[in-house]
Length: 88
Image (cartoon, rainbow, N blue to C red; front, side):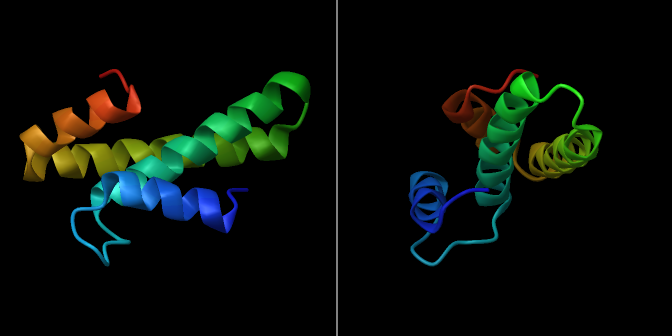
């Protein structure tokens, strides 16, 4: 789980405008952080299959958001991939 302060920091880094909380960039960055945290958890708790299922759902959601952003604005998608360190 991401704390409120960490979430606000993530939002500020990629927000398009001041009150942006729902753009694809923000959603992808939040999902990426949650995926990183859950992957770290699964390294120590390898048999936690319920969390693994949640991780797979988050990865699929992030992939769908990236596909949408790539279709809408490839330039923004590439910039976000570079900023978050995602590979295509």
